[in-house]
Length: 341
Ligand SMILES: NC(=O)c1ccc[n+]([C@@H]2O[C@H](COP(=O)([O-])OP(=O)(O)OC[C@H]3O[C@@H](n4cnc5c(N)ncnc54)[C@H](O)[C@@H]3O)[C@@H](O)[C@H]2O)c1
Image 1 (tube, rainbow, N blue to C red):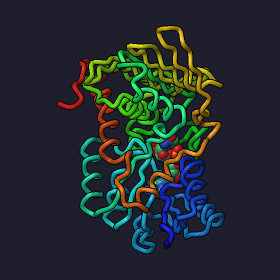
Image 2 (cartoon, helix red, strand yellow):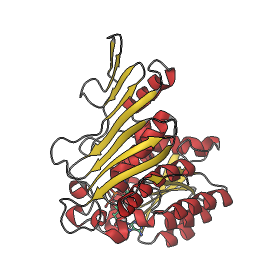
Image 3 (spheres, rainbow, N blue to C red):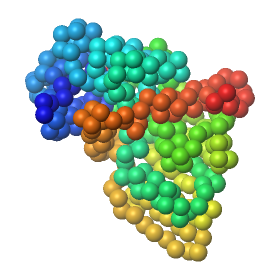
């Protein structure tokens, strides 16, 4: 079988730590192009992995005609780049948040469908071993219905992560549109929808910029959610957990509690009402300091090779984005927002 020809658009940190190494290791992949307006970044990867460096993705699409692309750029560019790539006949793996408005997300789904290409959103939290294990336990029914939950994602902010450090696009409204909510909150809106196999019906949120300087985007959000099943819970995103990073989720259910990421060695813990405790050592959750293979690239390539719609498809990314957009609407209006009305 001929290899899938991949172009990576945006050669910053997520490309460097996840997309590029995972493509490079994949036996069915050839990386044919790297794109970044800071051309040295693209050139460095081209030297390392082969392929050609471009400063402009449109030139790359026309010249290289890749089979598929990864879109690893600032948030505000996700939609236009993905739509152009789909129109050029390339399958698209786009980073989260897939877009910055619901209309953009809808247009991306349409572009993929019109051009008969796959669109996948890099919601890698679904593939992390603790979350896979937690989903298996929830789906087994042993815990009964989820009644209430809390999910949180907080770290010290993107300064030490982004290729551009403290001067990053992450802090600029025009490029990022959203701050901690687009960076971290959307991971958890996606996780909770998937874990509970349920949709967020209603959300109320406080979203604010509490501590980061020189930014117009949010650095903290605390949200309350009511799911369609009736379960209620909280979702927190923060860029100001300077110590005490948190990437945990706890679900209190009819028959006990499921704790994910609350203990460094036992990543998933089940405590049943009868006192039984099960501890699962299934491997850690990735952090900014310790990047683990995400599985996202393998899943994307699998979709292409088998011509099967990705499970983390555009519609899934759109629903998870919508929750976050409604949180901003709640902050602006001071009202609870019904997500699907
Ligand atoms: N899935 C995850 O866990 C995860 C983690 C971090 C970031 N992300 C997402 O990945 C995306 C990129 O974030 P990052 O951390 O790599 O940021 P980064 O700042 O490290 O890198 C972004 C890169 O995009 C480049 N770029 C800007 N405009 C471009 C254009 N028009 N064409 C090509 N490249 C362009 C920049 O020069 C920079 O090199 C964001 O949407 C972010 O939310 C996802």
